[in-house]
Length: 114
Ligand code: HEC
Image (cartoon, rainbow, N blue to C red):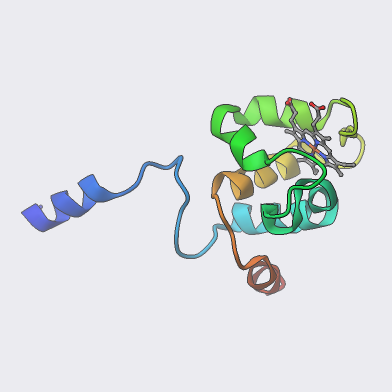
């Protein structure tokens, strides 16, 4: 392995930070679920946060397990999605949010139709 490769590897951001480039299949699936079920309260593209708190802040400190449990628990204005969404779909949403700022949900939607 050459020095340049090592340097690049060292500069790669940790997985917990916002990723650039193409969304993974899980992130794309999560974007669609989020747009359909969560964005009305948690903000379209996670950007407009009038009614519920910013889930990007939540996932920064929350495990996937905690997130899924949270999404299946009625709390205040937060409805339970236990009957509507599978854990796997909620895990996809977690991956999508974990990805960080996603400015092109529409592109993501279109990609996921292919
Ligand atoms: C009807 C509005 C609404 C919708 C729709 C909604 N949420 Fe929420 N959500 C809230 C509110 C309000 C809170 C803050 C609840 C509180 O602690 O008072 C919240 C909190 C949460 C939390 C934090 C729970 C915790 O343990 O602290 C998670 C995780 C979450 N929402 C996930 C989701 C996901 C995933 C979806 C889509 C599948 C979704 N929400 C859809 C309103 C909503």
